[in-house]
Image 1 (cartoon, rainbow, N blue to C red):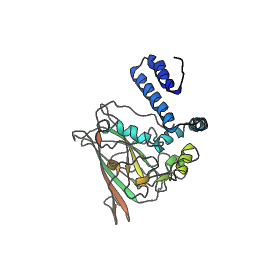
Image 2 (image 1 turned 120 degrees about the horizontal axis):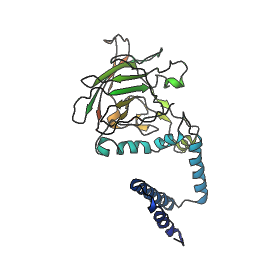
Image 3 (image 1 turned 90 degrees about the vertical axis):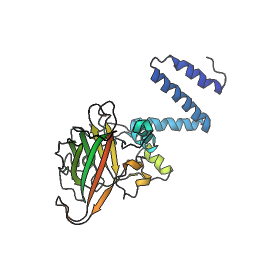
Length: 295
């Protein structure tokens, strides 16, 4: 098709990509073309703005490596990651879900830990936290034998690979649900932390006058054959950044009931300590593990 005016561009491009064999890929490419061209028309994108945008896209790739992914960080900062998660969980976006973002700090091969055991592997000062969880299916039946990975930041807001004072695999553990779908562990109450702002994500947050903090949370990855792998984060309700999360990850279903206690706990903690009871619901589906962000 010979293009005469700007109105001819989009139909010509759509026609050219009708030859994609895979039906789903053809659908995605066609929609991308329509929305991308529509965006340019909507804002009347200038040539200078297009060049600046291309430089930002290039820098996102240049800053991504084995330990940092600026593309995913930007996706989260635009709410795109949260949207994709919610569209694909909770009966395809129809109901609330405890599914959430994987984040950049999950590691393979966390230490196997017995139910009720501690995931504190080096001195980590902070309020004790006792967590009791139940995993069930959509009908409320307990799911036994599910593998559960736990990881979280320290009370100083640092994951163990960021902090030379923490032992390897500190505040990480792998559990197996019992016959009642239960697992539990002892840890310390986590703190929120800043996301990196030395690239395009930081530039975006600054021009919007937004902070770069994530509210405190625990990470869960639950795997069981015949169920869709459940990735979750359970946030503390007392974090000052709960409603302004830099990555838009907080949903109502993910705000945990972290109960504050004073005095000795049944497990021997003294002073201020916390308890958390949480139920996770797994949907039927394909069981697979994501690629670990940290190699």
